[in-house]
Image 1 (tube, rainbow, N blue to C red):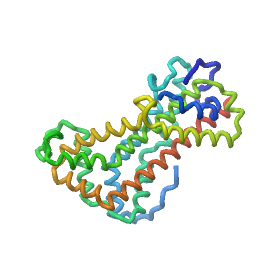
Image 2: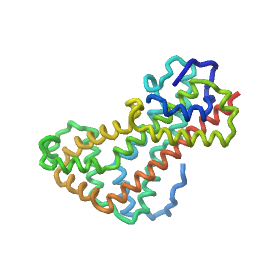
Image 3: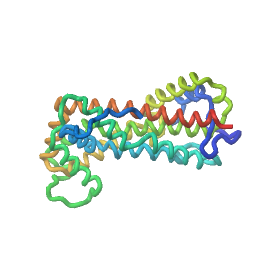
Image 4: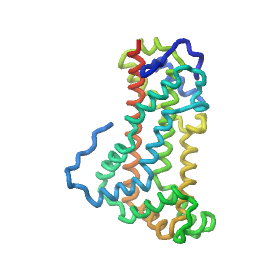
Length: 299
């Protein structure tokens, strides 16, 4: 995708990228903040606390934080090795990503989205989320309350079902969507062809961004490069969840199974996935637009 750099296209906080229309079409061949619902002071409820517990269970803040890592993309994922402008671009990208892909704001927005769902998360989810987090941080810590290994537990089928029902594998796959967008943008900037971008109208720029967002969302599996494949990310996360779930007490796994097969569980998961994807698309649009605007305004 990346050819030789014909001219400097990004320095300090400014950059240039090649024409969006051309790149949006070429992406298929690549081998690869919203306003929060205002809550009056003192209006916090047990239901809201339980929604935040569900978000912790699904590791939303941790997954959103991982989005930032793609802003520091390096070879071999970033297929530009020798550009003198790469370091400046990565610094600018990281700075912008920290402002746009804000994990704390994301948690608040997702909780707001869950709050409109007319079902409640069981209070027990909070304690289960804490136990899962502890096991995730210290996976080898001894705990007499945990069950047998993943392969010997009698509730293995239930563990498999819970890991498949959780939202976090889909959320992890969303980080790869972001990665594909950042890869496209960085390689475009470092690849040059700056005059084409300046020649585009504002309307053409927006149309090009929309095309890139759609193409990067669609490029989930082969031939996308493995580190940016959503299907591989989902399977890896499900395997990780099975390992953690197999170390929970049987009662916790049963409670999770009851929740994810309930109407409340299905509705909360659907609301979370929709809100997370919409926010990720909005963040991606803002990230692309700002760096493109830098390029269009550069001397």
